[in-house]
Image (cartoon, rainbow, N blue to C red; front, side, top):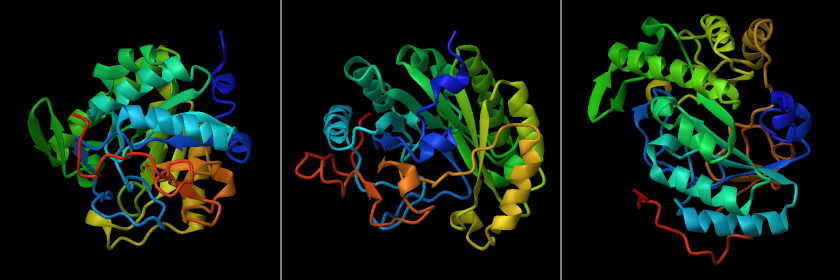
Length: 302
């Protein structure tokens, strides 16, 4: 059986070596989200900013496939197809439609998606059948007292839940989905946003819990101060590394994350960390997407 390390050896968001050697393409097909994170705002997009949850356009699964085809012609170092938003991929039927199309045309690409985990238990089998090998789950807490401060609400099975109750539902599904994905052989990365004064002392516990359930690696990212946490001072490099070091004693840490856009494309290690540089691009600006029909950003695929 192929090991987890070999499965993601060319994934630039799992391997430090791959981060500077291989590329990824994020196709922004997933508009809708099913939760509200206190640190997330998706209303604004500037082509010169690099943060999760932003894209210049929403594209259809069919356009995504043609874009991938052109991207591989321009940049053969791309080894990963990722779907990372701008909403939650599992809240959008376009995600699985894209992955299934890609599995048929690009079987050698590593299929990767990220999720907040709310809808993960219901979609694990479908992701497995679509060829997803790498799965990222954002888990910022496992304690309801802490998690209730981070998530204002979730929408689950047609109903809106708030604060602590919202987090309890989210956390249950995150952990159940993590265990199920790991049992199916997916290599699971845990993304955690370090929010000073909220979960900075708690992420060691998160690392212990997700390790026990089968997580392969953890990626602790600094807070981008916005939305509910706009007045919180982000952690310093020293503070971030201290928490990473503490968690590294429990679970392997990935330390090269660029906190990429939902339409990022290229080799991450050739880009500035959290800042667009002349070598950085997104799908809207990329030369292989010019003249490509694009769906209006306010449209939806569902």
